[in-house]
Amino acid sequence: MPLTRWLPGLDNLLHYRAVWLRPDMLAGLSVAAIQIPTAIAYAQIIGFPAQVGLYACILPMLIYALVGSSRQLMVGPDAATAAMVAAAITPLAAGDPQRLLQLSMIVAVMVGLLSIVGGLVRAGFVASFLSRPTLVGYLNGIGLSLIAGQLGKLLGYHTETSGFLAGLLALLRNLGSTHLPTLALGVATLLLMILLPRRYPKVPGALVGVLFATLASVALGLDRYGVALLGAVPQGLPELSWPRTSVQEMGNLFRDALGITIVSFCSAMLTARSFAARHGYSIDASREMIALGVANIGAGVSQGFVISGADSRTAVNDMVGGQTQLVGVVAALVIGLALVLFSAPLGWIPMPALGAVLLMAGWGLIDFSALKGFWRLSRFEFGLCLLTTVGVLSVGVLPGIFVAIVIALLRLLYLTYRPSDAVLGWVHGIDGQVELSHYPQAHTLPGLVIYRFDAPLLFFNADYFKQRLLQVVAQTKAPRAVLLNAEGVLNLDVSGLTVLREVQQTLAAQDVHLSLARVPRETLAMMERSGQLGELKPPLVFSSVRAGVNAYRRWYKRQQESTQSPATQGE
Image (cartoon, rainbow, N blue to C red; front, side):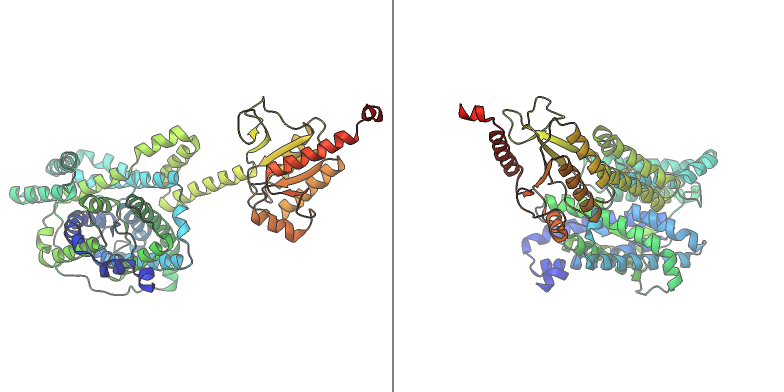
């Protein structure tokens, strides 16, 4: 049991079946084929040499294969998190490559520690913290920034700027000095990566594109014509070391590390959950948070940078038929072997080919179909998505996300402050109660108001509840009783309880009795502890609306009988 709980991947490997070996080996080779050029390209986003991107793959993939519970998820460098890391540490590094690497290692370890703490305190619910429109808007913004920032590699000019607006300005300044051989090679690589997977879906387009560009560059000697190459890649595996830092430095990086933690985890969980659902098993979000945290610490101590769930490589793993976490082990070993045996050929990769890979990655982050869906279903969600994108492009990743989240929370508070409510009645042929606002022909019992309030009764909406209920009673002809359908009142605080007592007293002064039905357990416990409303049983509290209505019918019948005249009774 402890092994299954803390090392689910290792538990799967210990119970490995021979029939899984062939598909896992093929999937591992396929994932490595995609991971190598992609990791090298994503390292470029932060300004790292090629080997740092590969370092960020090996140990994290091995760790996740042991600690992670998803049998399909592949971890590694991610375009979105790489962009966030670049935004956090590039200004602090001041152009010093060694300082940049140290800061990257520190952030990766901090993200790992924050993830582990979050998982231990069961904070996996943070995976639902970023709403779908906010996450799509964020990824769209990252994708556009990535595209704008990589145009220099494709057109053959050098720029130190990053970000969407700076990238567009750099393009306008350097458009006249476009290097045609670089542009030709980059466009050819890009077209190959776009068109080849359409015809042959199982072929790794990124790998084939980079191989084509490398072979073309070597065969034609394109470096002599000014086409930039990746350059020497150090041979060997990374040395493990703990990053040196200070409390003050960690404090300065804490906000960025927290934001990267949330976004990295949410992105990984979206991928892990979707593939787990496809294969009929579930994912424990908090345990996955711990697994991702340990993997990020592995990235930090092995001279890498923050990693996340890699959706494209996960999709390749699933498409080829990977069965277990052994796929990650195989991919990590292949990447390590490439660093040991093939470091020299890696240096021949042309920079425009890496730019093409990053342009494809940026384009892949932009979700036009989701935007269409938001527009069709909810204009507010569509606007929130666009606002997040604009925020990311203009003021930065974390501030843009923060603004979008605040607006979403304010809307949630507004909907809770002025929730939907309804006066209920009956229509012949329809089971249960219906809303009078939707069915004007619905009938009610004389003198009975059945009212439903669709939100918790809390300090900021209690007065609105009182106003609405008394308004409904005032519009009712000869009201005698109010039956509050409280199934939506999932929570009740002291202010809500006080207002409920005030409503009870106000109605009693008008000779109108207040009853409640379908009261949730937490709300009922709060009312019981206070003792302000009276004894919590009929005629005050009913288990169902039907029970309350039947009680009112019996009471109303007795009232009618008692008010009959003596003469009528004699007859």
